[in-house]
Amino acid sequence: MRLVAVAESVDFFRWVPHPEVWLLVGSLVGLYAYAGTVIGPKVVPVGTPPITRSQTRWFTTGILLFWVASDWPVHDISEEYLYLVHMVQHLTLTLLVPPVMLLATPEWLARLVVGEGRGYAVVRRLARPVPAGVMFGALTLLTHAPFVVNNAATNPFFHYGVHTLLVTSALLFWIPVCGPFPELRISMPAQMIYLFLQSLVPTVPGGWMVFADQAVYSTYDIPARLWGISVVSDQQTAGAIMKLIGGTFLWTLIVVLFFRWAQRHEQAHGRGYVPTEREVLTWDQVERAFEASDPPEVEQPHHPRS
Image 1: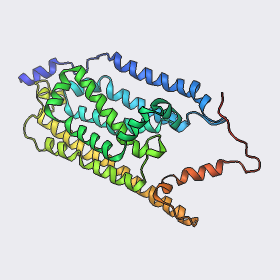
Image 2: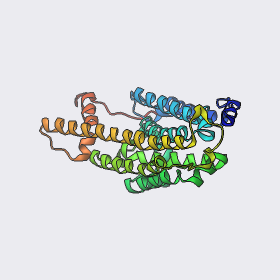
Image 3: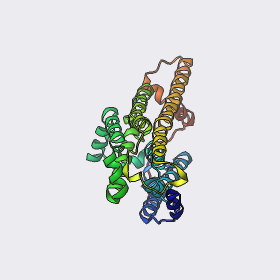
């Protein structure tokens, strides 16, 4: 009865403003629009859209996912009451938002942001499969350690630092798969192996939470229980979400990549062409480029706008 009274006295869905989130979301939208309308037309060939419709749709999807995962009520419930919501938030910020935002970024914009000197050298070194995979996997394990979770829930600066590290490592992790730099993407078979190895990492903390019979994180062991979910059921559900939903998402991508890889091999062999794996990776792009090009006798050179 006491627990019921405590739960009834708590307003789980009280509105809490997060101006820092609004500022970040607004800044990203403004910078993307400015890049596409002001900078892009000056650096891409005449007649080429700086940002395609597909990239605009990816950006809209990514910014909405980021906003929902970072703002009220998801942020507040995940940090104060339910770890399973916290798990959904982290999966969104590491498995959904980074690849979607990379797909939304045209190559010219990525090179403009990173630069050609030290910045690009750092990205090139860290975004290789081994360092990117190890760093992302290690942070996935570390951020589910009790001392990290408990401190992140009570210290806002530590909390934002953890999220920044997670999202940054996730961006580097996804660059070899769907990044805007063609030279940093790996072949499809390598992508499948890369994602398979990453799908094994969540089974460790996920299994640990599923089979724990007492509270793992003290910050969530509180009398106020949203929807009557006990602390043990909460963390067990979070572990199941991490193992099943996170793993299923990565395995779905592996299956999609396999069928795309097989289809491109079939198309290439149907044309009497024996491709290397990297050529198979970009075959459809080459085909579209040939179809869109003018005949040689009337082809005019493209010059960037001044």
